[in-house]
Length: 112
Image 1 (cartoon, rainbow, N blue to C red):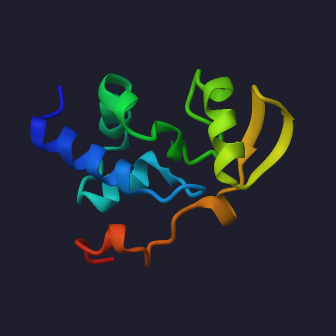
Image 2: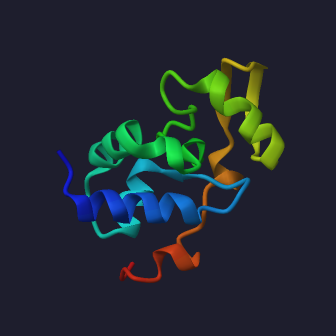
């Protein structure tokens, strides 16, 4: 089980991701100084309902596992770049343009 400090750090980063942008689970880990993308995913699975969870995606560019249909309206509303959209269940996030750059202030506390 992730520590309360880890949970708080993850949720703080996720709340700060701008609309229309995404970070990978690994990116969130990097932003908090951790190399634990699975732990980031665990935090979102347990506590992510209170934050924009759809803005955190796997490095594959797929929507969060099992939540493609729920996430799709958020992406459309926020103007998140998508590709290969076949239906609300089958699409990818265009990471090359949607991914938050490492120059964003979210990463300010780490040395890249």
